[in-house]
Structure formats: structure tokens, C-alpha cells
Length: 235
Ligand code: ADP
Ligand code: UDP
Image 1 (cartoon, rainbow, N blue to C red):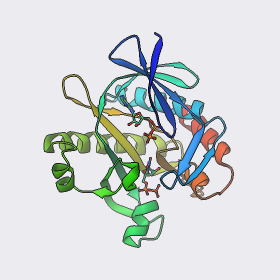
Image 2 (spheres, rainbow, N blue to C red; image 1 turned 45 degrees about the horizontal axis):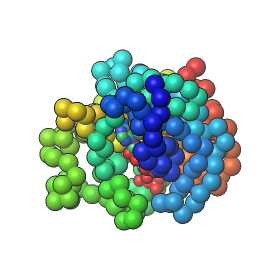
Image 3 (cartoon, rainbow, N blue to C red; image 1 turned 180 degrees about the vertical axis):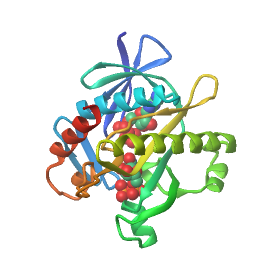
């Protein structure tokens, strides 16, 4: 398979068209941003780690009945995926209060949530990714009700599978962000990536953060945390 042309360069990945019209190649960069692009930097080796970890999780989810866009990993930093028509939503699932939820509701970071919480954000950099509810999504024509039902079902299944798996690695899954697209038959399919860039992972024994919050908050040990997560996940 050959890359034909660059389709899109995002903050963390580059997406290429290929000589097979229904397949794309995703290239994972070391670039990192935070605060809607205000903070920029690089995390050495991140691209390879996120590619490998995402491939691992997508394969694991497939074995447990959840399809994704993932087809195969073809190099250190590249995977082949099914080309989808993306839905402009960031779907966040939370088990423990952190980040924007902790701030918005005034909950101390680390407060366990009685039930998993699902939130939608509009994927729109100019607007700063605002929080949306189902009514906003309807009036903005971003997705249909039955599509949101499918998205929520998949997102909660992914949550349960990841919680159980990560617990065996002594990791607490605090929260994560998923993206979805529509395939050629309008079916909802899980896409993008699952990595320390878009999940919060805390060590169960020490509450040490092993994710992008180390970069967001200049905590140091960023590369080490990403490597540690990959080692635990794939061990
Ligand atoms: P961002 O757009 O947030 O800067 P990235 O740098 O991660 O994000 O770029 C990857 C882009 O590819 C994202 O816009 C994402 O929505 C899109 N994408 C992910 N999976 C697919 C797919 N299967 N088909 C088409 N686009 C995808
Ligand atoms: N997240 C993401 N991309 C974004 C915003 C958030 O992947 O543009 C992830 C983030 O890593 C965390 C979860 O979504 O795992 C919830 O993030 P939150 O709303 O708390 O925002 P933040 O504090 O990261 O700005």
C-alpha cells in the first residue's frame, strides 16, 4: 500500500490517503499541544508509543466484540485504518473527577464518581471545544439520536473493558476521550486513538499520573510516563 496524498495534518497525527480509496494511513507525531493549542512542545518517542498502544487496545477491543477503524500497524509510527466520515464530537467518559469536570463542578480531583459520566464536546478549535448536550447536537446536525445511542453504548463498553484490563496492570482509568465516524453503510465505528494523549491513567498504589497531564502541568518525567504505560499495557 502506498500513501498518495496528505489529507490532513492535525496536532498529533498526519492522515494520508492511499492507493486504496477506503483506507487511510495515520502517522503519529511526537508533537504535543495543550490548552487548545496554547502550549506546544514535543514528547520524544510519543508517536511510536501512541501508535503501538492504540494498535494494542484496538486489537483487544476487537477480540471483545468492539469494531474500530484499525486495520494494521505497518511501521513504528504508522497504522492503516478504515476511512470514515468523522463526527465532530469528542466523547469523554469519566470514572473519577479530574480536569475540566473537577473545575466545572468544584469537585476535588480524584473524587470517584458514583456512576460513569459521559460528556460530549464539539470538536471545533475556533470555539475552544465547548461542552454540548444531545439537544445542542441535534440543532447543530452533528449526529442523529440513534447514532448517539450507538456511540454511548460503545463508549461505556470500552470503558468497562479498559477499566478491567488496566486494573490488572495496577492502573486506575480516570477518564478518556473517544472519536467516532460513519462507515460506507452509515454504521458508527470507533476511530482515532487510545493512548496517554487522550486518557488519564493513574497508578493505583501511588496515584502517580502516567499520561499527558505531566506535559499539561509541566510535571516532568513525561517520556518516562508514556514508556511506563506502554510497558505495563503490553507486558
Ligand atoms: P486534531 O484534529 O485534534 O488535531 P490529530 O492530530 O489526532 O487531531 O489528527 C487526526 C485527525 O484524524 C483527527 O481530526 C481525527 O478526527 C481524524 N481521524 C481519526 N480517525 C479517522 C478515520 N478513521 N477516518 C478519517 N479521519 C480520522
Ligand atoms: N481530552 C482529549 N482531547 C481534548 C480534550 C480532552 O483527548 O481536546 C481527554 C483528556 O486527555 C482526558 C479527557 O479527555 O482524558 C477529559 O479531559 P477534560 O475535559 O478534563 O479536559 P482537560 O482538563 O484535559 O482540558
